[in-house]
Image (cartoon, rainbow, N blue to C red; front, side):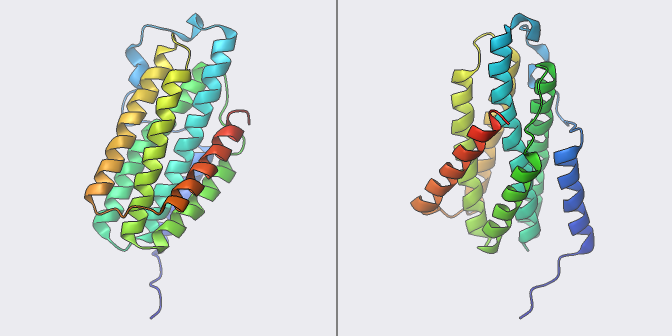
Amino acid sequence: MRTPLIPVDRLLAVADAALRTVAGQPHAARPLPSAVATAQTRDLSDAEKRDSAALMRVNHVGEVCAQALYQAQALSTGNEALRSQFEHAAREEADHLAWTKARLDELGDRPSLLNPLWYAGAFAIGLAAGRLGDRASLGFLVETERQVEAHLASHLERLPANDTRSRQIVQAMKHDEAAHAEQALRSGARELPLPVKGLMRLAARVMTTTAHRI
């Protein structure tokens, strides 16, 4: 049996999303969580700004990867309800992308120079997960979101104590990641084998270590 061709309009939409993610100026549908924060960027020392920017750059890379993963998983599934779920999660993650970019701008820093590479790698992983079937793809989503949630929790401990703006962004992101994982579990996600989880943690460590500086 031949694999059905993917509609051209869907492929074009994926290509457009990739360009907007790695080269465009992201726009959030929801307001920046830190908009009412009392602490301002000028209250941070130069060293604190550098520390916050490095962590927010890592978080921005995570959102670039999230866009790639969700777009690839949505492209891979033949289940329209599941595709809608992936696309909805991608829209929420797009808010995270815009929030982290806005905070980097405030801190006078830049996103990772390797974002096109991160996007391509995450997209390939998302396609591979999708090829294993919907339950495995959902299981991959759950484990990804759990690891991201733990990663964000560590950032809340590492961010400068008076960087309220970054902290509010990270806290809002952490809440959304937990909700995405819970929704995937309700949709029938399959638990991934321990070796696969370990490989995912190793890949994430390489990405975060590199993005912290580049």
